[in-house]
Length: 218
Image 1: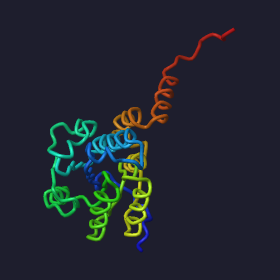
Image 2 (image 1 turned 45 degrees about the vertical axis):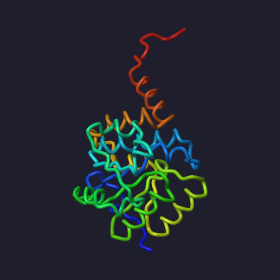
Image 3 (image 1 turned 60 degrees about the vertical axis):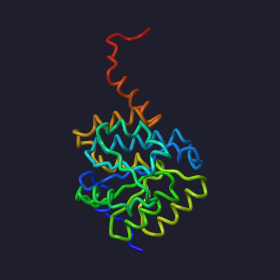
Image 4 (image 1 turned 120 degrees about the vertical axis):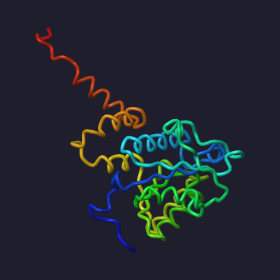
């Protein structure tokens, strides 16, 4: 196995491309590895973080006429973007998706989707076998059971796929708080989707904007 380590192994926004796969009502109905609302939140956060860092995001569904449209929390982030609808279960066998990814010229492929054991594992394992630097965002994905999600992760790790969570991806893209051009947009994502971290950030802003008393309080 080739170990993923060293500075060059970290995600770079200018070399990343995200593929969000089958975040649809049919799949959500049998999502049992995570709280469904958490997966919706985390996927929307990943989409917004990608937009903040100008990372291309490809949206794809499978037979949307039957399985339902991708969650509006995701499509609303990219209101003018076409969703690629497939019949193939394995996204990476569909040229309509792969050609769009290749056209970006980027090499760090980031995948999240429903379900982990099917629609995430297949393209991730195929893509890494074809030489793509492949990462799966585990908390923006989910399976029909805790076991199926975990076994899929183990299977992909054995194939060499990198595993991360959405907040880790966003932090790796930011890398340095001195890169101030992306801080405001990232801060908005944190406030909206990072739970207590977002609330703590708002509290910090409140404290920073609270005038220092000019007289001692008795």
